[in-house]
Image 1 (cartoon, rainbow, N blue to C red):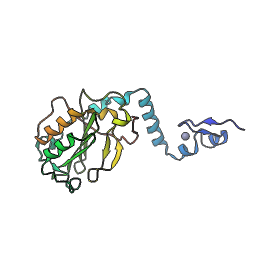
Image 2 (spheres, protein in one colour; image 1 turned 30 degrees about the vertical axis):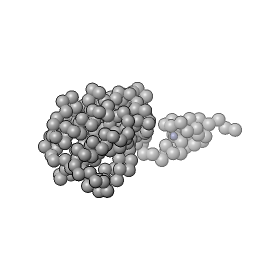
Image 3 (tube, protein in one colour; image 1 turned 45 degrees about the vertical axis):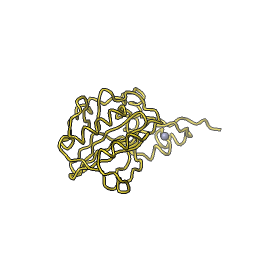
Image 4 (tube, rainbow, N blue to C red; image 1 turned 30 degrees about the horizontal axis):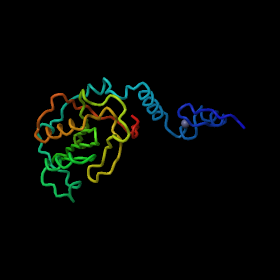
Amino acid sequence: MTDRIKCIECNNMILPQTAADNEGLCGQCNKIPPELRAEKSEYERRLANRSVFMPSGEECATSSIPNELLTAQWQLQPEYYAESNMDSVMAAVSAAQLQPEGNVFLVTINAGQFNLGFTERYGVCEYRNEESGEFRYAYSEANLREQVPAELHVCQACSCCGVGMLWYPSRYHMPREKAFSIIENVVANRRTQDVKWLETGDFTYTERGRG
Ligand SMILES: [Zn+2]
């Protein structure tokens, strides 16, 4: 039996010959382009030193409030609410408050989207506008600075069908009541004093209960 050795990028145990052929990498890692491998190991490093649980200085520097949050008329996302009998945005928000987990999806006529996702304890507020290219999340001092437990992790859901897509990073999570107060303010075009709107980056590496 040959002793297997660890892939230099992941936990796979590989044959010395495989390592020799692939510069220390397992077959799977060897298929991933070097830039992506570097990105992934940078993410793992930030997870290990816990810096992933706070916005980076770069992320904080992106702070700006989207104009639509202060001026637009927000409406229910028509496809998501097509089967419901919600007649107003506030009716949808009130109904959501009674649910243990779920979403509220609002839109503007100028391609703006406001997505609130929530679980029993946490909420995430996300602003998106594919036309203007603006993508932000709400950050406050009350946001989580540690790992969100898997069962309370908020999922980024598709705004037309509600199907889950990605897991929001822990630092996007805030107390659920605060997230609901933000959506109420947005609907009324009021600023939420202690909330910053930071650009969302690529969070595809976040897994449920990890990151
Ligand atoms: Zn590997």
